[in-house]
Image (cartoon, rainbow over all chains, first blue to last red; front, side, top):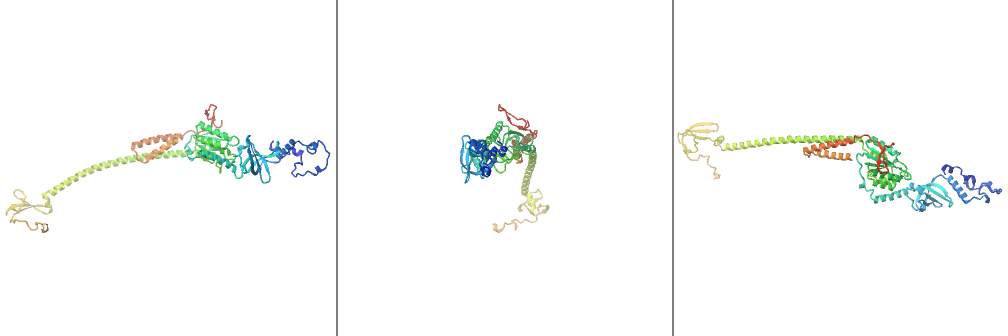
Length: 433
Length: 70
């Protein structure tokens, strides 16, 4: 039954206009006695009594036609998870309660079954369960007041991932500087692929993108994501994997909080960037991925370097390499010059030392020369005839011609008188005696 | 990954050359290695523009990469 049919005037209204009127008060016309007829309005007389099925069916149609799907708020009690997979519970407040059901097919939107006594808001449709003739609220979305339910499920999963060491910082793998191929796990026709493509084209168009399609929301999305991630791992041709989708409501992003998806990422041999478009929440995938990016575009920015930067970097290295070698060559040349100079000076110093030694010898020789004393004012007397040195007075005799050799010349002389004995002033000083 | 290895080695080489402690022969040898690695790295930046592909796994477990549009 579609919503429009439900909202239109249902058959119940035609059949039983007053029984279900909101005032609940029968119109005055009905109060008057009328002729009993079997073909009267159903239920008006015992003869036209309604079957229970008819009543309940009519009630169901009226009720379902009267209410849009809506949010209700209350406390959870009597939660039962049936073998069939459906969840049954009651929502109540101080005065009333209503039976609720979450069909198993609707549970993918709900992170975890609620706790007993939990205050929740539930979105659903009011129906009647014909077998029991009871009102039932069929819940399709459910959250604890203050996000408790999402948090509860998430926290439990986080603890399990942590216990298995899948969130350890040392597990985080570095991304390659220049990936050749990036695998993108996302919806094949979603905005994420286009966003990533645009970034790659702009930054480094030689990086190849390989899209591995998966549904990213709704029933079956987690299984799809897991199988796509595993496919990328089996393929082994990617240097980096981006797993993600563009922004959406928290429920739209819920597949990325699926523990199976997180575990698939952790097990993938390719370094992974999670890129789930959200601002505040962190998904399970973010926690186990090697790098977390806030959007698919940001993931591409992280994974792909700017080509021009790389080229500039190589240019820098080229310059540094040339410079370093040039400096090394200069150094070698300088070294050579220095060695040459050292050799010359050593040789020169050796020559000098030899000359110094000669000079020293010459000086010593000079000092020993008997002629040297002449320089200090002494004179030497030599025999005129044979040139012998006349060093004793006894060798003289009056009238003997001799030569007096002085510092700057020779005086011819003749002895006058001989006085033997030590001349005064040549005696040693008295105190040294 | 080889790009990264080349770059890391180039850093080493430039560093070693800049420390000026090497024998000249060794310095020239390193320089020549550096030039070769630079050439490889530059070549990997000069590849053709890549297309966007789709990862398809065949029933026999092999993979093909058709263009995304196909």
